[in-house]
Length: 229
Image (tube, rainbow, N blue to C red; front, side, top):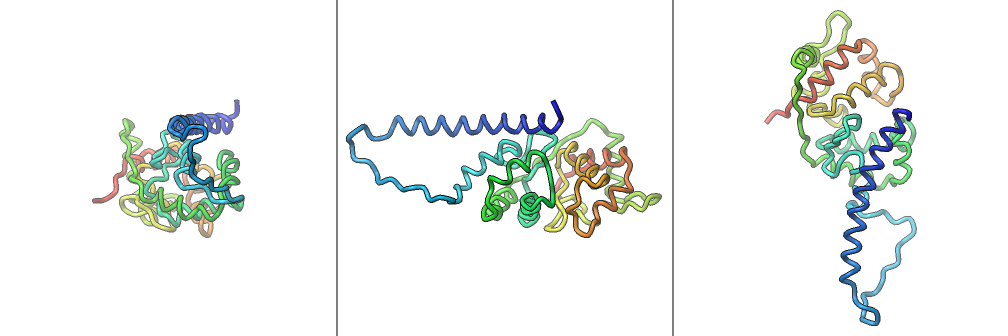
């Protein structure tokens, strides 16, 4: 099975579980419904093209990113705590095809652009979890690159754009606590041209100057980084 199908399968599996919970809740509600012949509340006809409630839409997003935005699938990003405008912009890029991903390309057609703001607002307010690492040497190397860059190849310090604590901004994503495999994938995509929706090609230029070890080191370090209090 190809790697994209593998990740899509994991997301779908999680999504099916969440939908199962929804159906169970519906079944309980049905048991409490008025008996046949009893007065029932007037039914409200569904409006074609109506935007689904946020809670319903979160079932779709939560399958891959978790309901609280802290994805337990390492290859998927943690959305919790990302800037709302940044999230909305990425959703827009997926919608337009400016940014591509096998899983998101199959999901985004189901989501209306009018939903982007509420989804982004929800995930931006969730608390980002952090991780620990047993790769001390790799973390130390990543810390050095994050804070100082790589002088020999003109790689700038990551904190120059993403902040000293990696909390990011509207323009640059939060990195602290992010899943390492996801960070590795994104830097690799920027490096080889698989992702090109960065502002003025900045990340592409930076990633092209990084080798595999440096990419892995930065990814491992930022996963352990905590937001300043």
